Image 1: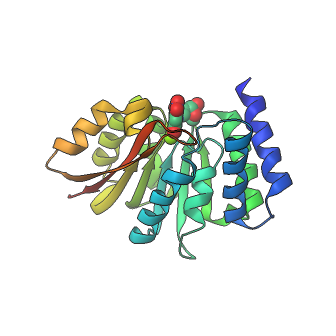
Image 2: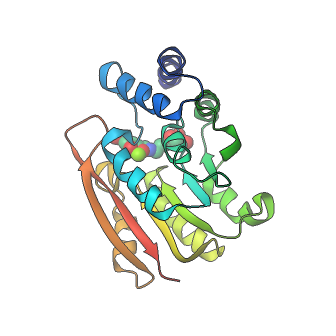
Length: 214
Ligand SMILES: O=C(NC/C=C/[C@H]1OC[C@H](O)[C@@H]1O)c1cc([N+](=O)[O-])cc(O)c1O
Ligand SMILES: [Mg+2]
């Protein structure tokens, strides 16, 4: 089953990556997914685009929606300045369990908070529970039909500020048509598409980067 697969991914990290070296954890997962078993990590090709956006934004507070095994969480955290933090929401407890161990292997526990549960329930609690004022960067990579409702929820909860960057994975494959239509047509966003490929495949996919204009 799917859980056994993610367990094998964790073992590949523990076998092939150097403890405390985040980039070797990223490499080990990419090699495992290319050579052994496909998995829905953002992957190395889209990962490079993610890296460049993170480096450009240099965020202090990051929200990730959809932790999965923690690949993008580790990838982002490895580029953050010392005091910066990521809150990452994961609905599936099995994935959250694996992600915590991948994050620990990378030695990034101090920068990352894995929160289990539905994004729709946790977003309204961000301020009171985690002392978040606004997010500098949001990476959307969870259920594709939750991108739009959760973006609207972030707006309504005052968690976005002028200049907050939303970066969304899979806007082509599996696709997030309602979200794409919204950020591309709303006067409150300036949107840009980064064409790429679905992780570890030749299928088209891409990331949509949207700046919240306030
Ligand atoms: O569903 C995707 N992501 C959302 C994940 C959903 C499930 O994992 C996290 C969440 O708790 C849920 O259990 C996805 C799917 C594909 N895909 O090719 O099918 C590719 C991707 O990059 C993806 O992020
Ligand atoms: Mg994805």
